[in-house]
Image (cartoon, rainbow, N blue to C red; front, side, top):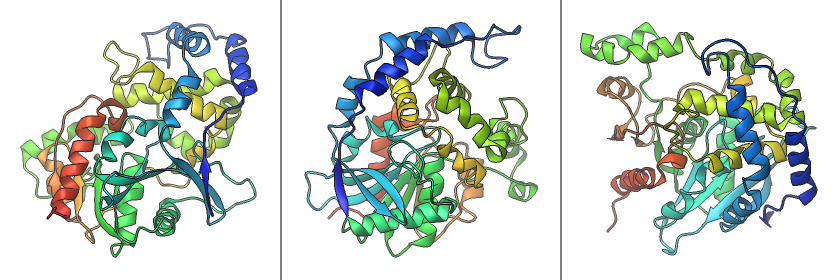
Length: 369
C-alpha cells in the first residue's frame, strides 16, 4: 500500500522545457511603473533565461531525493509524501502541510532541522506536484477531505498520536485536523492567520490603538490594491490552466507575481533564493499541476484558519497583540510569537527560526521527562 518513490524527471521533459523557454513569444512592455501592470517583461526575460541555461534541476532533484519519499493511495487519490524519521526512536510524529502556490519545495531546508526532534511526514497536497488529480474523480477536494486523508495517512504509518504544522493553505488543513481529530492530534502549530478580523463583530472590545494596528488587514481584505487574483481563481481556474499547461513562462509569471505580492519578491531584498523559486516553478511545470492546485480557491478552502479549541494551538508569526485578543476567543492559544521576517513562505526564507518555534511549542505541549 505504501511504495518508495524517487523523483526522476525524464530528460525529454527537461529538454522540452528549455525549448519552450527559448521559443517564448514575449509581449510588449505596457506603460506604467515597474510591477504596476504585472510582472515586468525585462525582469521575467532575465529570470526565464536563467531557468533555461543557469538553473540546475538535476542538482535540486538530487537534493530533494536525499529525503525518503513514498506514495500511497487514499480515498482514490495518489498521494506523494516525505517520511523522514528521527534518529530518536521516541520522537513525536509530526505532519506538516505546505502552502499555496507552493509545493514540497517549501520544505527543502526545513525537513532536516525538524527531523532532529520529530518523525516528519510531509505530503504533497492533492492536485499539487507529485500528487496529481485522478481525472476520473469528480469529487471536490476541500479542507475536511484533506484532513481526513492526512489522518488516514498517519494511521497507515502507525502513528496514533501526532502533532501538526502548516503555513497558508497548510495552516487551514492543520487547524481542521485539530477540530476533527482531537483524540489523535497533540497540538496545532501554524505560522499565522488566526485572529484576523473578518467582520465588525471581531473588532468589538478592542481599544482604538488595537483597531489602528489592524487597519492594514482590513484594507487588504477589502480587496483594494494587489492583483485581485483570488476571485478569478475561485471562478474560472480552468481558463488560466491552458496558459499554465502550455507555457512555462506563463506559469512562472503567475508564481512570481504571487511571491511578489506575498513577499516583495522581485525587489532588491528578495527573501528567498531564485533557485528555490525556480525549483517550485519547475515542479508545477513538470507535473502540470498549475490548474489543479487552484482547488484551494474554487472549492472555498482559501481564507483564514479554522477556529478550534479542542487541542492546543501555537502560532509563530502571529502579529500584533490585537490578533491574539481575537484569536483567544475561539482557540486554546498556548504559544504566541510575533517573529518578524519579510516573507510569507517562512520555511523557505527562515527554516531555522521556524523549526525552533515548532520545537518550542511541542515541548510545551508534551514536556520531555
